[in-house]
Amino acid sequence: MPPVWSKGLKAKDDPRIARFAEASHNANRGKPTWNKGKKGLQPWHNTKGLKKTERGKANINWKGGITPINQQIRQSFEYEEWRKKCLERDLYTCQNCEQIGGKLHVDHIKPFALFPELRFEVSNGRTLCEECHWTIGAKVKHFSTRADFEEEADIIGMLVGE
Image (cartoon, rainbow, N blue to C red; front, side):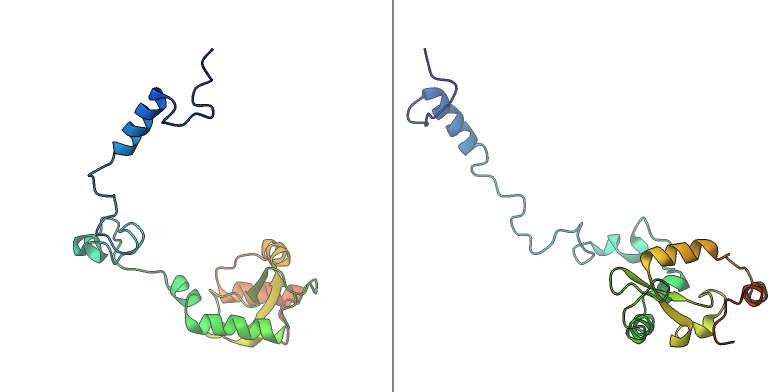
């Protein structure tokens, strides 16, 4: 009885294995590799590799070069500095449950959208763990005007230091 297909056999031992090995070895012989002459990352990884006709306004996904103002602010250096200062002031501790470390968020006491002048005030920030942030955020209404917020905050005593 012949041995089970290629079980322990080498190409020199069995002509069937030799034929298969030769065919797979020669399959790409003489053909350049897919990345020959290409340096670094491929075009789908970054914009440097894209043609000028595929970048910016020429790209089919161009939407006018408008980044929302909230996104610009939250990605700014000033916002990161504000966040770090709040975390350091609170000693990286949740101000609600007193958890030290973990996934911490820095929350605006007065809403980011309604009080643009207080966006980078350290006194308007508080450190919360992720769970407390979601819990508190679920209880807080989303106000459309400052007057609505201040009226509601006065009723429930939400504003600290006023």
